[in-house]
Image 1 (cartoon, one colour):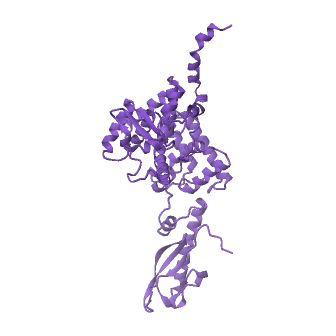
Image 2 (image 1 turned 90 degrees about the horizontal axis):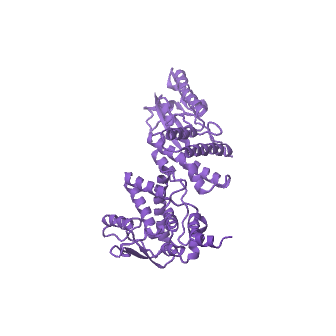
Image 3 (image 1 turned 90 degrees about the vertical axis):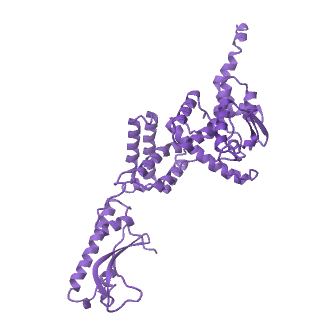
Length: 451
């Protein structure tokens, strides 16, 4: 039966011998600790000949023989005193910071340096809540986001208790203990036990991810770890053959669209601005699907005729889309950027084979993940009450068009649906404004035949 692992290591002395030791030469004694398969050593100011060293003394911790000379007792007492002191400091550290002994901690104690945790023993939940308080007090987030964030952290503490993942207390871990593995377990727990949707889980992850990014800036946690944690946000799975999604209410109204455009004008991040341009182009180009935005080539575009003609990836049918001034302005901007390139937007490699469905599927997922991560960040900054993604552009166009009085038949053709039935199934029951407008046209006639 395997011996259970100790919570902290015990020290052992070793005589540092070369491959071919000289019996007349005295060699240095080292205090050695082994932890997580790593050996940490410190040389002690004692030199001993090989013949005067006994590794089996003091229960295998090592010591000098009587042949060492008249100082052998004092030397052994000094060695034991030193190792006992280090062992005691490690035991005390473990008691104050359970399961937090690391190579760095052992090295610090051996070097007689004060041990200071990078996170200064800060509780993760406390740190996140402090960030929420700070952002709320500076009007960076609204009241609802503040309260939702606090509630999410209460549930996170419930997760720690329920899964026995708390360290220094049942519902608490130190900030430095955050890990990708812990977040993966948290996501699984919320899915399987709390039965939360991916969108709900993403909202719950947001305060944790933002706090970890801030902690990385303060050098409290490793920036590489923070970068991996930022990728934990759930991205909806995408299929090239999936049916048109039923409209879930995720579309921007006029005010939200203006806020997005204002954000775009002020934003200083070049790549994020480009992603917003792609979103807006999808909206202006009659709600183009993200895969068709990705695969749009300059050969599909006719600026003089103000239209694009393309075989759509999903339907495998040619679709002609009229282009308004806003869409053309975006195309002209990208014409300067991608002059001589095959694709309008730089989301695919020039060498990709568009007939290779597997390669296109992988490329689409990668590009969509990058775009949606940026859009989601923007959506949070603008306090949009749902996850902003490229597909929202398609829904936004459809809702705008229907609410402006375009018939279901026309909107269906502009969206590239196979039939009007699809458009009605996806959108009609969610658009009371449109239905009310249509019904108002009958009011006069109906009044003439009223009782």
